[in-house]
Amino acid sequence: MPLVGIALAVAAVLAACAPTSTATPSAAPSTGATTPTPSPDTSPVAVALVVDGGGFEIVDSTGAVTFAHAWADEADPAVDALTEAFGAEPTTSFEDNTNTHFADYDVYSWPGLAFGDAVGLSKPRAEYFLPSWVRVETAAVGEVAVRSRSGVGVGSSVQEVAALDPVVREQVDAATPAVYRVDAVDASLGLDQLSPPAEPVAMVGLVADAADLTIVKLAAPELSWSPF
Image 1 (cartoon, rainbow, N blue to C red):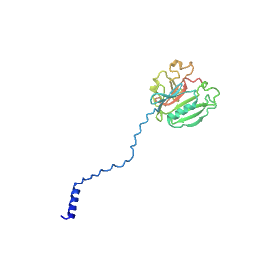
Image 2: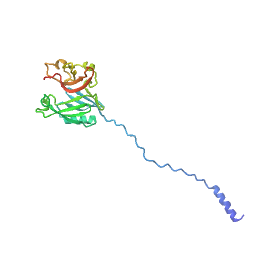
Image 3: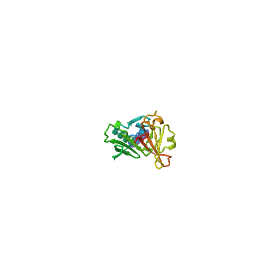
Image 4: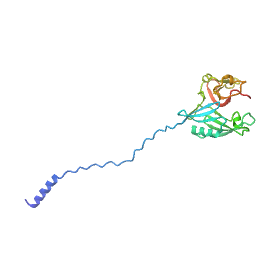
């Protein structure tokens, strides 16, 4: 066999014996790290504003009292606490009570609720009968329910309020809405201690609608009976 033929034959044998190479597919390029799912926020939030004859408390979703205001306390901390609880700044106004039994007030308002702070007093706040107040015309400000210590408030039935003990009912005349006073500053007081000739006692006032069926306004503090 010619040399060229021999060389071609050897090359063919070697090619037949060579291992076949299998290509390994490359991994797909990474598109970036997976974004973790954020954990739900379980921090306590304000859920209730509870009012009685002595002041009010802010209660959070764990049942803890996060802030307490007595009516004679300075107003600035209360305004800050209410602002945080309601999640909104109040609008401000001035209530001029010249030539009346009442002081003038700086008024801080949120939807359905106003907080008044007596200004220009000629005596210490603790000696004045109405150093601060709340007036409420809603069952809740945002997600924060507003109620008296006994659990009633705007939207409650008069029947539910009248069943409380003690409760003081006052109605000047048929053209005037009835007012129900509950939750005295001292919860141990009975009806005989909340009526004349006993000393007036700070309570929560609940104003009924014209039909005397439903509470439409909460105001505190109100005296169990008016001495003037």
